[in-house]
Image (cartoon, rainbow, N blue to C red):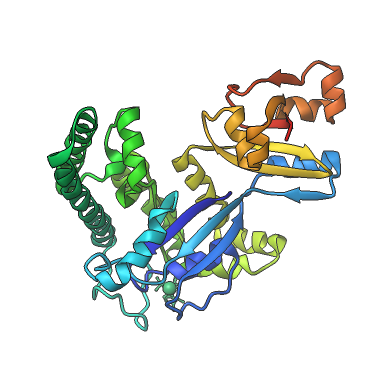
Length: 363
Ligand SMILES: Nc1nc2c(ncn2[C@@H]2O[C@H](COP(=O)(O)OP(=O)(O)O)[C@@H](O)[C@H]2O)c(=O)[nH]1
Ligand SMILES: [Mg+2]
């Protein structure tokens, strides 16, 4: 199970270019069909573990990116195509909105001019429209159900109705669902709907190569406007990143240094996506394989076992846990066991970032 991120934005903003940069893909930027690609999550601790333990295989965690191809503008009104794309986006864990900042006379901007703030607002509005349509359908159905409903079903429906009306009023005031302060119970109900404006949003401002010297100051300026709950904004040179993604890492590093880029766009994007989603990493070492896994911060060992295999979750007995730092000090698991640094934990143990876990289970 990987993390799914949907790439959206206006036409010609550079979505496919950025998709290629993130997935080291070669998708045709002229193509309007949807693309799915995989990126390996950069995790330096995985390399340290591999160098130390010499496993047969090293398996990083993965992020799946979806480029839906179609522009998100007007999608909700175009019933014929909206259904398919909205369904795909609704299952994503987070969204990336690619906003055009590069200038190129030969590639006309669909809105006729360059305007970062306008384009961000346009997409926010589209997400809100999509959610409002879904809210209205649900409220209509609740209205019908209420006519024949008896207690205690009635009570539940009324509660849901009240909450959805509140969400609707906020959306109409341009407050996306991701910014609402919800109780755990409310958040659970909302999660069932997979609203688009509830998803963490990373805004990627796609700058041209000639804008690279101003990238940091532009980013700082945008950040002061758009760094809101569950929303972050970064500048990235999509075209250059796409070209660098095709090169050997060491060669790409050299070019990056020349351009004054400190970290690859892929690394930054994934790191921010993980932050937005509240994900942490844990590791497993078994059958000659060292693997990295991603899990929501605050998850217990039982859930972590389920990430790996449903059998492991069902037949969970115990988890043997050592922190990454302790393991590196001991250089292997048996040494860690001898030193008493390997802990036995039960189902409800809260997994910590960097834990190295061996699950004991029966099937
Ligand atoms: N000059 C320039 N062109 C770019 C840049 N990023 C993307 N493009 C070009 O803009 C066009 C549209 O990009 P594409 O990724 O297909 O956009 P999409 O329609 O959002 O998928 C392509 O011809 C890209 O090569 C950039 O940073 N600078
Ligand atoms: Mg495209």
